[in-house]
Length: 261
Image (cartoon, rainbow, N blue to C red; front, side, top):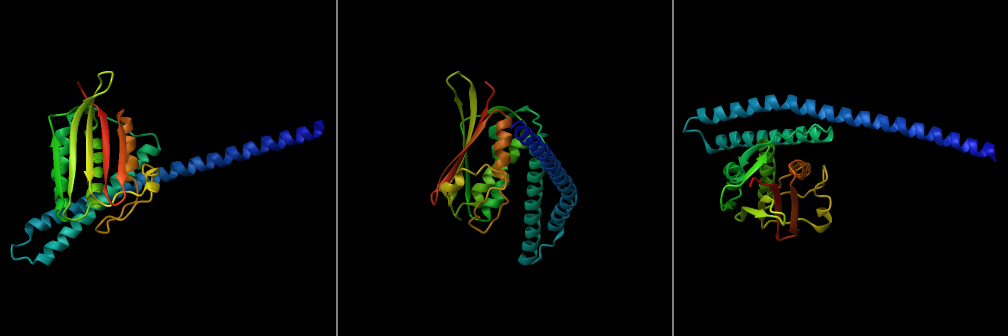
C-alpha cells in the first residue's frame, strides 16, 4: 500500500514538473510573439509614414489638368497607407498590453475639443459613404487623460460606426457631464449609429482580442483588435466602456471617464 502511494506521489510530482516546463515554454513563446509583433510593427511604421508623406506631396504637385482617375489612384494610396498605419498602431498597443507595458501619461485635456478634432478628421472617411457626423456637447469636459491613447479610442469608435453604417445615414457623437451618488464627476461619450448592428452571440466576445467581426457596409474588414484595445485603455484610466446593439437597427458605444470637478 505504501509503495503504491509512493509511486503515485512520484508520478504526480513528475507530472507537475512536466506541466511547469510546458508552461515555461508557452510563456517564453508568448513573450517572443509579443516582442516580434512590437519589432515588426515599429519597423513597418517608418517606411509607411514615408509613403504617406510622398503621396501627399504628389497630390499637391499634380497639375490641375490631371485626370480624375489619377487623383483617385493617389487617394487609394493614402487610404491604404492610413489603414496600415492604424493597424500597426493597434499591434503596438496589443504588444504593450500583453507584456504589461501599457503606460498612461495623464494630462488635463478637454474631451469635447478632442472629440471635435477626431470628428473633423473622420469626416473625410464619412464623406466617402455620404454619412453625416453630428457631434453634440453642452460644454467643455475636462478629463485627466493620456490624450494620444484616448484619441486612438475615439478614432476607433467613430471609425467603426462609419464602417458599419449605411450610406446616407447619420452618426451621432454625444458628450455630456454627469455625477455619481458620491458626487464624483464623470465625462460620458456615446457614439450612436443606425447601421447593421451586432448579432447577440457576438456581443459577449466583442472585447476579446481578434474577435470575429462582420464586414462593413462597403466591404471593409477588420482583424478584431480595436475594441479590445479601447477597453484596456479606458479601464487603465479608471473608466468603463459599454456596447448596446440590435441587429439590423444600429449600435451605441458608451465611454465613461473620471472627469475633473
